Image (cartoon, rainbow, N blue to C red; front, side):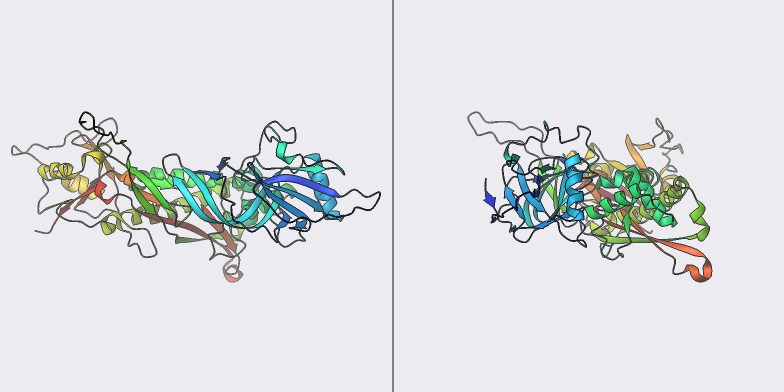
Length: 496
């Protein structure tokens, strides 16, 4: 046991039984599915954290009366398993209701509100390990927890604290079929989200699901929106990303991240696979080099307007409409920024964010097949294996496929090879954001796009007084930039 808050002894009047609950609010070294990456909390992450004046809540509802507060009625203890707690609930209607719900097993998981001081992110494994927590503000008994390995149980008077021997895997208190860690993936949240946008009444279950998802605060980064904003359901977000990846040239080729903003992420880069060894000399491990990339948070806003008659739409039809609109907004804006983004309030583009010199640029007044071969020759061998050509439709059919040999025969007659266009064996990606006369040759997996928080949507009827319309404002926090500039080459046809 590493640390324990100060505790005080309390006398219980004869005939009374205190409402005692015990549980594990934070678990060490256990996985949590964050919808795109797996999160862990390091065993030493709580070292040095001040546990004075911590409140115990239900579903992170800070507006209500706390169930307990440390150190008087809440004891917090760091063990090898995590942060364990013991609380005496008030003998009130709320306290008795929560105690009974925990005793019945209706509520069996916990969560906590905190600030992160330090992370480590493994891009290959898509794992984020929280190595240092700056502060803990409250712990909560919740309906669904991001860490399903947490637990809480009710104790009867005189029952000993058995937390140090509690095994959450073997305990009958824990349900073998854990609920999903992603609160935004729950069917009740999906229906609640769209009913709110349509102005329809929610059921009791939908109201609870929406409150739980809001309490998890995935929308914390959307600080320019009002409190009415809510993050789109996971099902919708996945469909938006899927459609965007299938309809926009380079957006379908780049690497997508779902990590917190302003977090430096190491990305492995190719190294020499083997080298000759001198007998007796020390052998160095052939570890891949790392290129670090840090994504900021840029706001992408889309305003949609619909007739107030939309209230009569079914949820599936309305979800289809929102998905199409968001797909268009996200793919078009990010797709354009991948190529030409200025980096000021938007992602950094390939053309604008890389220093183009003779070492990575082929300039010509009239494009030839030799120019394309020169571009391939400039690409470092480590990146050539996954490299592709990218150009606009106008460049492909107006310039590249028009090239002929000395006898007037077209050089590229096989425009389709297994359904994929290729030049010298390299696949061609069509992206009309690339200017006519410019051809990119690169390994586009070394450009990264980060969408850390999904998409938040809120509704307004203010403009509908005269027009009868309802406005929906969607906000996406995103960034993008070249991870390894050396993985890209440019062919540019200059004016004669």
